[in-house]
Figure 1 (cartoon, rainbow, N blue to C red):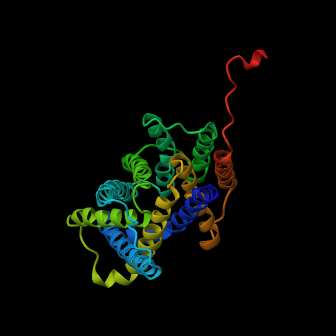
Figure 2: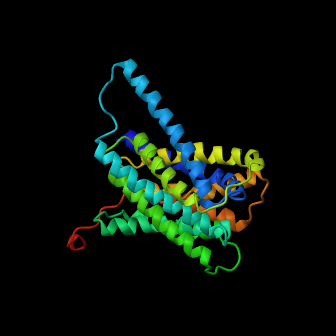
Figure 3: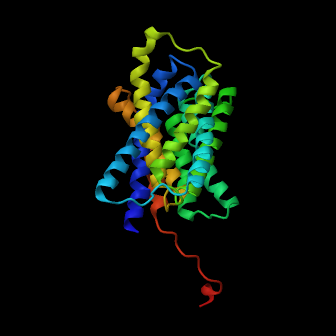
Length: 305
């Protein structure tokens, strides 16, 4: 139980830190290639990285004499990979498409609304989130607004693309929640990026490839996003969701915006204002609230005693 609690709390925060610090690399890569082309490159790199990891694990287990099947049933792995990969492909595309006409701050805020969509969808599926999580979600949305949105908030076409992205990310989180106890987490992550590679490559046929002379400028950002933001972070997300509440995990992963703001201040020299400090404080308070045990409701008639 203690191990599950550590996994549920620590791995999503590491995931959020990787995603937050990788945003600069994603923006740089998007300057040189279309959304489908960029996502194809990152997915292929992530799949190759995870396939190598699966191979190393198999060699290690064989040397230890542990020959038991770890990946789960092939049917569950196939269905999980198809479902997760399709949702992730759609989410990544709509996010990148939205960024063409909306600000990165607004895109970050709207994308992170999956922290509201996940527990709402959970209610429809018969999963109730504790009251502390709902209070944490309210604080997190307020904190995200302070961190991400500067000036007047208005809705544009790009914002609608990013809103669709938020729904797709919420779907991916819930699909992972369904399959994570049926199949091995690393194998599921590998399968989802294989599916994403093929789907994104099909879309990339409609885009113009970047010139070969721009390859050195593209290579660094794509490698970083492919290995760390995709291969490592999404695998940690799947491992974190094993035996965990998806609402709590999604709330912790929304700390991505906090890490992005802090990284901008430390690495790029951006100066944080009072609004951003308030946003960070609200996000941290939301995370603390989500970890508090749910207080039992008083039984009927207890007030009469």
